[in-house]
Length: 138
Image (cartoon, rainbow, N blue to C red):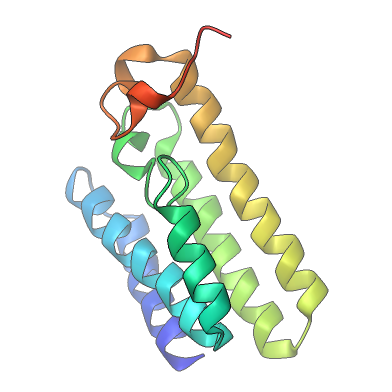
């Protein structure tokens, strides 16, 4: 867990920085955090599946972060996500698999909530890679 903890400490420092640099740095570190989780799992099968899934538009851990600064309360979103990163590490360290899964699901729900906000703001959605693949009319 050492690499994951080190990245989380770096993320802590970034969460309270001023935009736009904070979001750029957070995005890179968040991607690193999620990649380290995959390494921690020690599963080639899982790594391949996550690679496959995250190649789909909006499915990567950092897919929506570029647009967060345009959403109301974006910094609070990063703070909540960072709290979830800490909770996930704590659950893994304690060997609490069910708790880790619960936190990971909440973390995914946070991303989904932000996607829903973006879907309501077409001008922001259009800035994201792969946005043309999404039908927001239906």
